[in-house]
Image (cartoon, rainbow, N blue to C red; front, top):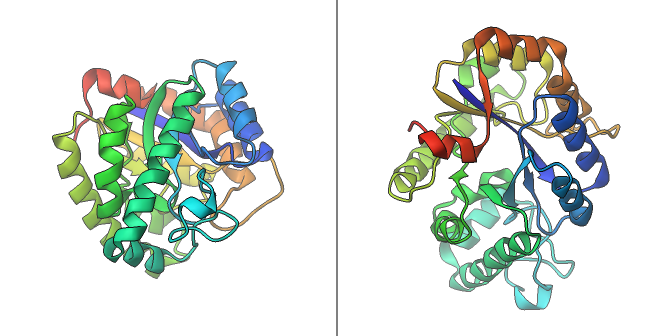
Length: 284
């Protein structure tokens, strides 16, 4: 079994950057997803350059975060501060039905890929903030860019609902709704990926427990892993924030946990990246 251990929001702020560096150097973290317009992106890129074994992907932002283009160039999709709306339903409808919004998003996504390419880092993979990359209109833009910029893979969040509910029954209704919506989107995305040459992990852990990837859950997930390939992703920080959806210092603690490391070794799980999955091709 191969397991990618990823941290999202690299470059968003220094506390997240420091957590990612610690989890990579002293823990199990193998890769991170960079926000091209993040406030601390230059620091993140410098860290990555000095730690070449850390695979770095692009965490595209099309909702609830910073754009890289000036607001005047993409006025239909960001506010006057250059930020995307934080309302998923509104954003989803806009990308589905507004030609102007899709045209601007196409420019913005290319700019995010180009900003990443300008760092000189090799592009490991592509995923999306709040998984907006799975929106049908967005994925149709993302896949050609991922190929053009030589990404190895794309995240498809096929999580394990029953495992999450056994670990934490809070927000059970929300988790079931996520399973329905993103289950359909993931199946559609996987069908698109089969003809793209890009890889994806057969199972993903982290979606149902966003911001709550704590040691007991991580151990349970490792013990229940059956897929040949999986991704486990976290939202770590060294700060004091403890939002339910993260970032959360508990996520960092889990990646540094000796118990987690022992379980990985006990099960013979190989820590991997999207590039190493591409070498053997991922299971669908």
